[in-house]
Amino acid sequence: MKKYSIIIVSLILIIFAWVRCSKDYPVDEDGLLITTRAQCYVSNFELLGADFQTVRTTAAVIDTTALTINAVVFYGTDLKNLYPQFSLVTDAKLDPKITGKVDFSDLANPKKYTVISGNRIVKKTYTVYITVQPKL
Image (cartoon, rainbow, N blue to C red):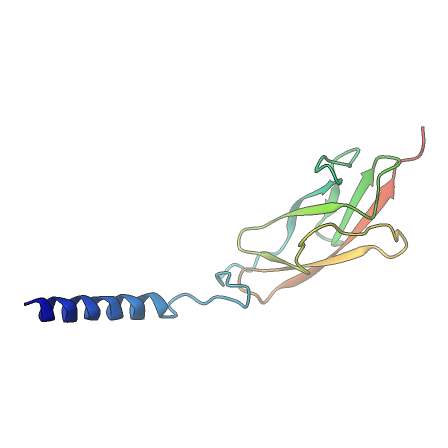
């Protein structure tokens, strides 16, 4: 009887593993679910300093037609140690990935980030322009 219990449990585990490993839902190279959504845009942008507090003076201006983001930061902000945060439409992802602080100190060469839709077909590259508030 014990022998049959072990065989039954083993078969159940094998079936469970097979079902869990099936590819019913496609995923991309990052392990994210690929969906049918073709929407592709940035809905919000935040810039945080080394203390994880906002360094923006006002809300960032996001132009989804011109694909630009304009943010004004406080005078004296350390532009080499900023943490950008993007809010994207559902199922979209950002390239390059943000894994830590980003250097925005070269104002003549703004950073570019590509938003990739949930279906991984539509790609839109946004340019992030940073302006430093004038000294008061």
